[in-house]
Length: 112
Image (cartoon, rainbow, N blue to C red; front, top):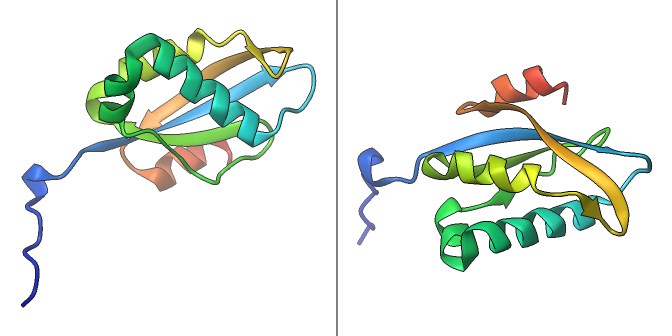
C-alpha cells in the first residue's frame, strides 16, 4: 500500500534568506547558528521558532550564509537577525542580503 502524497496546498511554503555576518574576525558557522537560534528563541519563543521551521543550509562562505524559513515568519526572522550584537564574545552584526523563494536565484544574488 502506497502512502498518499501531500497536496501542494497543504505543504509548508518556504523562503530562503541570505545573510551576512560583519565582524572583525572570522566566526565559526556553528557559533553563528547557535546565536541566531538563541536570539530567535528570545524574540519569538519556542512556539514561534517551531512555526518558523528554521533550517540552515551548508552554504557558508566569506561570512555569508543561507537559511530556510516559513514564508509567514520572514519579518520575525529578520528582526531577530538585527538584534544580534555579539557572537562568541566578539562584536558582530548580522544583516540580510536578500530573500527568495528559489534557492538558485538567491545563490546568484548573494555570491555563493
